[in-house]
Image (cartoon, rainbow, N blue to C red; front, side, top):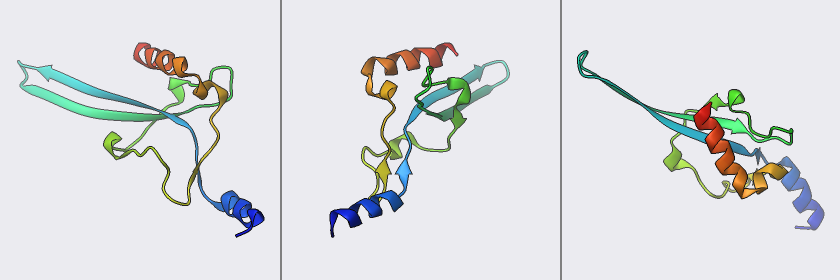
Length: 102
């Protein structure tokens, strides 16, 4: 394959967009009412180039199992380029604190 063919193939392949995953486990227990409720929740939140790159109020609930996530995309699928804020390691701790404080 020539380089031109490679590039056109890349342009036509699906691209995965950068997202931040938030996960929580809700546990409600009431001994008097004999209730013991446990629910796992996951949320996906886009990372943008905006001045506030991660806004938890824009997160959408996602029906996925965290243990099924992969480090590399499936064959024929690419990752899009990360916004600059997503390349700064300390931002992830900051976003985690913001998600906890709501």
